[in-house]
Image (cartoon, rainbow, N blue to C red):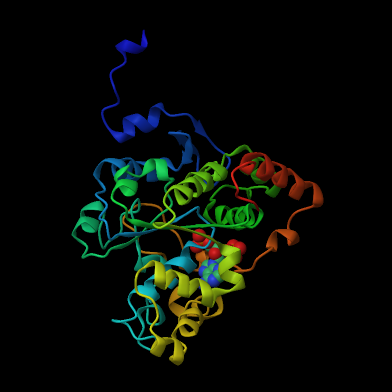
Amino acid sequence: KSLADESPPRSSSDLVSTLPRRGGWAKPLVLYRNYWLNPERLKHIIPVKERFKPHRDDIILATYPKCGTTWLKALAFTVTTRGRHALAAGHPLLTGRHPQEVVAHLEVPTPAGDLAGIDKMPSPRLLATHLPLSLLPPAVAASGCRVVYLCRQPKDAFVSWWYFANQMHKGPSPIKFDEALSMFCEGFSPFGPFWEHYLEYWKERLARPEQVLFLRYEEIASDPVEVVRTLAGFFAVPFTQEEERRGVPEEVVRLCSFDMLSGLEHNQAGDVARGDSIVVGKSMFFRKGKVGDWENHMSKEMAKKLDDVIEDKFKGSGLVF
Ligand code: A3P
């Protein structure tokens, strides 16, 4: 049978069944447009490119998973809603809402809505995604909407992934650390290759410096107050002198800190509310929250193996880890 005889896949499930598939992580992944993705999630990913209509005043928080999405969502939500939600005892993040739930993901249907729900959100919309830029509609760049990209030292991102994947994993034996490391180094990880993900947004940052803010987990960890000020300026809601005098940026940092959020009862039990069959426990988004935890997990050889990949893949890009 020639290729011309093949009729195009009729639905996203037909398409998924034609894609290269590989196991090793918590669930088998399929290769779609150069990225390894969860096939269950893919049916919500494909429509994003066609149906998501970005607005000029949208803010999109884009992250490679395990790079601090939960933290960035909490910070961005707190900064942008501080006129409505005082940073006090009744704040939504302190009274029942998980940071993952306060900013809608483009590719994750939630009880609060899917793309249709996102269409109806009032502007300016604060949205999140794990999708690489190439799986978002070109209108994201053309519309000039603002993007905050957050990445992380890949060795720490990998360690965080390994823990997370093992919690999601229902198999008889855990995913072995060294095997997971080899897969990660090959570019085979959920939403990977990680370097392609990072580089797509890095190039966009170079092309549209006014509209793309490129952050690293380590940078937030080392000077969170300054990053909160940068975020507020980038979102066009800079702190007033009066707010600075009252220590509001410091309050935002305190409210969104790992110790504060991970210690709240409502973040310790139950699952993040989602409209699909991927169930993730609320506590799984809080593990250690430290920079450099890879040193407690990797031998010198393991670290070198990933360092070599990092050096090779980011060479000449200006992005250094
Ligand atoms: P570790 O596994 O290294 O602890 P994501 O939110 O993208 O899934 O990333 C999860 C990582 O961010 C985990 O890293 C988690 O502990 C850390 N994290 C979650 N909330 C945080 C916060 N408020 N401050 C700092 N780190 C946080």
